[in-house]
Every structure is written in structure tokens, then in C-alpha cells.
Length: 465
Image (cartoon, rainbow, N blue to C red; front, side, top):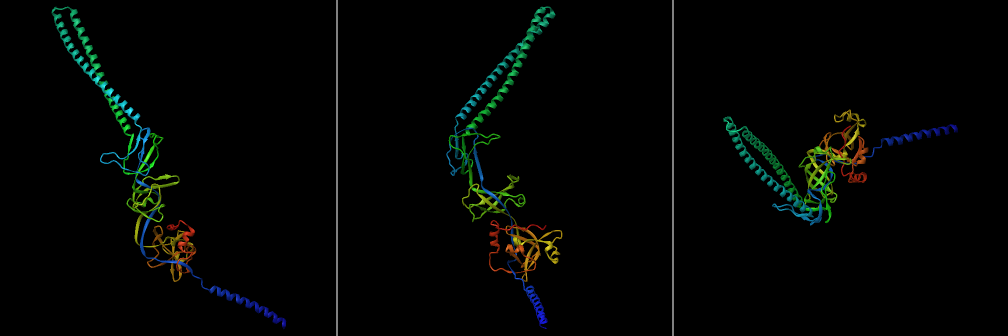
């Protein structure tokens, strides 16, 4: 009996242990899941402006490079970098920017003028010769007429026997000689007239040479074509400046720019250029003024793609309103061009729109008309309903820097989960959630700085795949 009692005691203990384990397992299974703290936002109609962002550099709207038109040494540079200059006014030249040594240019002008004068005198000589030849030809014509009369008279007299045949032959010889002399004089006169035409064309060429020499001499002094500031001086007094050739650019002595109107030369991506139009408003942020914003307007759009290294872009010029704030050429800038405006639309933060696997969604959600069966990924937004996160398929529209338009799937007043982003990545359908009170280390703002220092905004979500 004692042994049997001991056996029943051990068996009872085993049964009791199993019961205890099942009891605690049951308590663990029935324990409610702790809600996840999330950031929530109510969806309400608002406005959204699409933007195109592009990097760029500052440059003046008007800039001229003063280059050498003739080869000569610099003898004077009156202005230095940063000094103001004026352009042409009322027919008077602008500020003298460069003076070159004109000794050789003046000698070349005198030489061409002397050549022109000599050729003009030669034309006068040729005209006098032609006049003399014309007079000689008239004299020959008169002699020929007389010889013709003598020949006719001798021919009549020989018929009556009053003269001999030798007299007729002499008259014929004189007539033939004068006829030949007239032909030779006419040919000489024609040659002289043609030579006069050649000399006149040569004189025209000499006149062009004189004009060119005078122009070259005028290039020894270079005047400012615009009002502005000397922004760069590339030469010194005494240097020899050279003119440009096909394979070698000429010497750029200095540059003048009008700094009153400045532009951002923005490099707009090929995918964004169709949305950019002349006259659109823009905002610019300059690296030199990190806490300030400049307004601007699109003035020109490049029609030809520019390739620089591996970058391909279209140049878009945005005129800035800098309110007399000093900005300089080649400063770095980022431009935000406001392209399309949407009003009374439902928007959510772009990070709230997630790409969810279609297979991971419950069947009742997969049957939504906003979920394409042929796609493997569909955009969803988590709504807050009765303390739970409900995955809601949506149809998305355009985006700006931070928000995305929801075309279908949400209603005015819906409460959606907006963060923290780490929580959004792991959020599941029907997961218990509760509103997070105030910013925490896991909030959106903190995550931006922790995860991506440059993530001032989240790009719009990718289209369904």
C-alpha cells in the first residue's frame, strides 16, 4: 500500500504540472496585444503645387567678353575688377576699357591709303590714254573718208583714160592702210577700256583695304558696350594680345557684366522639362544664403540638351528677385520651379503611401477595384479605424516635395498613419495602434536626420508594379 500511494503521488504531480503549463499558455494567448504608437493625421481638402527641382549656378543676365580683334600690345587698362563702367549713350562711346599700341596699325593704314591714291591716279592716266586713243581714232576715220573719196575719183578717171592704173593702185593702197590703222586703233581703245574696268575694281579692293585698316586702327581702343561692372581682368599692361583662329580662341582681355539682373542657370532633367514653361514662378535657395529664399520667374528654356560628363540636362534660366542682396557669378543654387497647381484635393505625406505586396493583403482588400490583379505591388495607406491600422488601397496622383495627392481610396476626415517611418515599414493590416502624443525619438522629424541627412522630403511613391 505504501508503494502504490507513492506512485499515485508522482502521477498526480505530473498531471498538475501539465495543467499549470496549459493554464499559463492560455493566459498568454488571451493577453491583448500592446498597441503601437504612431503619428496620425486627418485627411482634409487642401492645395498642392507640383514642383521641378534642379541644381544650378548664378550668372548675370547680360555679360560681354572683351576680346582682341587685332594683335598688339596693351598700353592701358583704365579699369580694375569691381569698378563700374558705362555703355554707349546718345551716339557717344562707353567707357574706355582697353587701349592697344597702334603704331603698326597706323602704318598699315597709311600704306593702304597710299596704295589707294596711286591706283586712283593710274585710273586717271588710263582715262586720259583712252581719250587720246578716241581722238586718234576720229582722225583716222576722217583720213579714211578722204582716202575713200580719192579711190572713188581715181576709179572714175581711169574709166575715161585720164589717169593711169598706178594712180588707182596708190589710192587703193592708201585706203587699205587707213582701214587697217582704224582697226588697230579700235582694238587698242577696247583694250584700254577693259583695263580701266580692271583698275576701277582694283581701286575698290584698295578702298576695302583702307576701310579694314581703319577698322583695325579703331580696334586699338575698346569701349564698354553696356552699363555694368568689370567682373574679370585676364591681362596686364604690356602683354601681347592675339586674335582668335579656328583652333585657338582669341585673348579675352576682360569681362563686363550687368549685375542688376541675375539668373540661375538650372540644369533640368529630361523627364521634368515638359512640365516647365516660360513665366512659371520659382524659388531659389543659394548656398551662400542657407536660411533665405529668393523668388524668381522662368525666362528661357533651352531647346537643345546639354551633355557635361555623364550628366544630360536642359538649361533653364530663372530670373531672380534678389532685393539688392549681393549675389555673385558662379554661386551654387537649387531651384524649385512651381509647375502645376491643384486645389481642393486630398493629400497625405508622401511617406504614408507604401508599396504593399498584393499577396500579403487579406482577400477582401485584394478584391478592391483599386488593386490590379496583374500587379505584384499596390500602393496602400494605413487608416486608423477603431484603434487598428487598416491597409487601404489608393490611387495616387501628382506630388510635391513632401505630399502626394490621393485620387481614390480616402475620404475627407479619414485618419491616416503618417509615421514614424520605421513603424510604417513594419506595420501590418489590423495591427492595434494608438496616437503618439508629441514627438519622440522615433518621430518623422527625428528619422529624417537619423536615416538620411539630406531627406528634407520624401519622394512620391513608385507606381504599382
